[in-house]
Image (cartoon, rainbow, N blue to C red; front, side, top):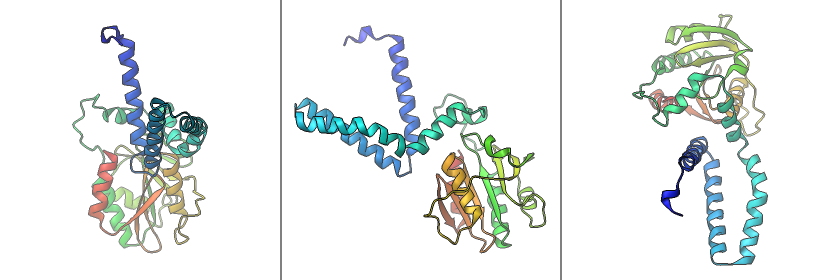
Length: 257
């Protein structure tokens, strides 16, 4: 191919493919799906080699596997595909803007525009008093489909506000709190509950609801157990229990930045 014959549309084509591959990598990074993706790439590389070496039998077997495997991929990567489509169809323009910042298209200095310290401090205080809490922090995917089940708010995030919302005698304490950027946008939100049988029986509806919303979107959740005061952090349907809030603060800042 003569490089002088490359058209502008060819360059755009290459950039779009690179953009999609990078976003796919971000979706599966840190999950089991990344291992599956690497496995598929290895099988495809072997398939190309067998074609070049004219190994017809093995080439046909691998070709058939890759052909049928496309249907299996839709099942295996269903959560990632769902998140990608939710991002494309999202009406949350702030979320899109945060996504584009990953590619350095904007002049953002990387400063985190959310009071993470206040959120963690509130969770730590509620943990000490065994006050149950469920906080959902939006990232790229819109949470409008669950916000409508609760009470709309527009409050700046800070420790006293969070504690007052989840105070046991507060009319707003039941359900989840939604945080977007540095605003509390909804309280008493009803979240989809996960039916995953792998969730330990000792965890109640708060944890199951947190697993449910993090399975369906890329949001992250903080859960404070009313029974033992344990703080849990959930992302992509998986949860980690934390005793050291300093470590949790670092992870939360990284995931929200």
